[in-house]
Image (cartoon, rainbow, N blue to C red; front, side, top):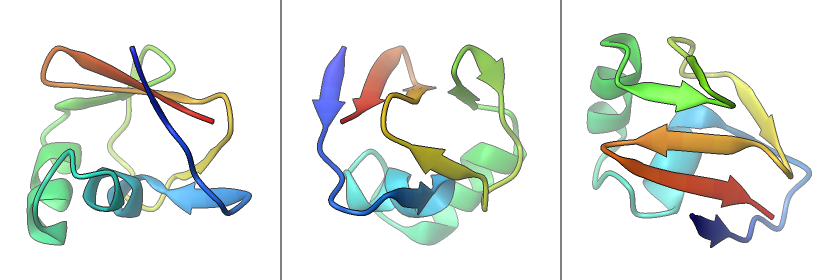
Length: 68
């Protein structure tokens, strides 16, 4: 599991995917989220504006990322 440090208290799911380098463009993040390819804390998440906080775990393409 990779740990990704976030300086803000919250970050939106689509912004997190782009900011952390998991995807290269915001449009890619939107596509993957809407198609159910992203999990948040073990559950498929389809809301690209979902607010994430420290301790949340995002799963995408066989990798896990913990927000610290």
